[in-house]
Length: 387
Ligand code: ADP
Image (cartoon, rainbow, N blue to C red; front, top):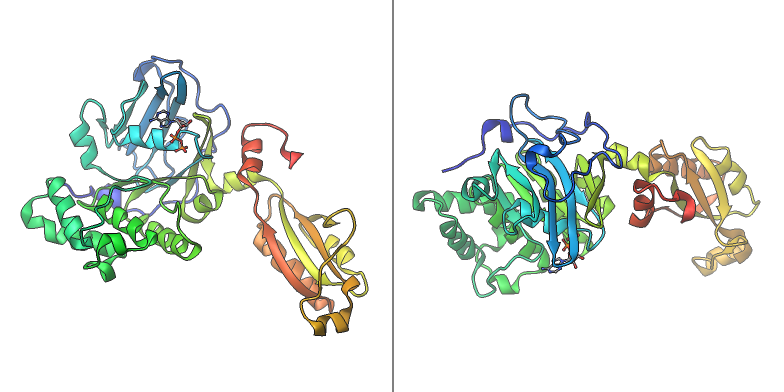
């Protein structure tokens, strides 16, 4: 049966070299435009193999539900070996786009080719190249994990003599070997997600389409599912949707950003970070001699330091000993703004090291996550400083 072509699985995802997409890079072709009239895709994968078509080629894709235009004139491609994040807030059109790519939903306009096959005209050939994990997979709670995957392998027409090996491979890759005999209904959501991932991996397709793979998971489960996805990225091309920017940063090499059905930007993760702009951190210190602000301002990559709130925020002492040693007035929280081009984690570490070297005790230091709203404001060209 179908196995991944060597070119689809041999190269790990590359992290650089993608032409930076910009707002408006995906030109509008208008409803009803034929694939051939669509513009060239704005960027091809950084590690595409010359001569091979992109694994996913989406042109002028649109979908309406009655009068609601859920996806409008979306064009992009995903090259072999890439791990691409499809990023956007809830309701942006991510699931609708993914469902059109896997052929579960017919497009209103445009076309999708997967591994060179048109998903509407050659659906069986196109589907052989991809595994799909929907946001909520229709698992059977009364079945055991291996039993369920064996059943799914039969449904996918995997030849009988290959089913066992395929199921074991999928169990292993998705990290569910320890629960093979467990009833699906008794699994945690994290494990159920991994069973759905194992399902998508049956037949070892070169392309995995994952719809919000970490939705509804607790932080530990999120961490382990992201780890599995990173590992899969070494041998599969992955397109995953998410509304969480950090998910794209931690698992993907490139991002496509969709907002209200329109592709508003695409580019490498480094490009996205630059677009996110200035990073901020909150640093809480025992500042007996009121030196912290001046010291931090002198630090490289620090653009500004302001007390949190309109006056220095007085934070309760962490313990009676601290209260006795420093007094409540000495404990302040400061917001530090770093240069957009620098890595905020490193900057924060340097600031903390500087304070500690100067004899200032740091009670807490944490980066403030840029919200999706901030990122979107930047990506869509609106006022970036409005936050
Ligand atoms: P996302 O996956 O980004 O959250 P969706 O693709 O699910 O977004 O939805 C995009 C828009 O289409 C939303 O406004 C949603 O309410 C609407 N929508 C999605 N599915 C349907 C449907 N079956 N019928 C009508 N509207 C739908």
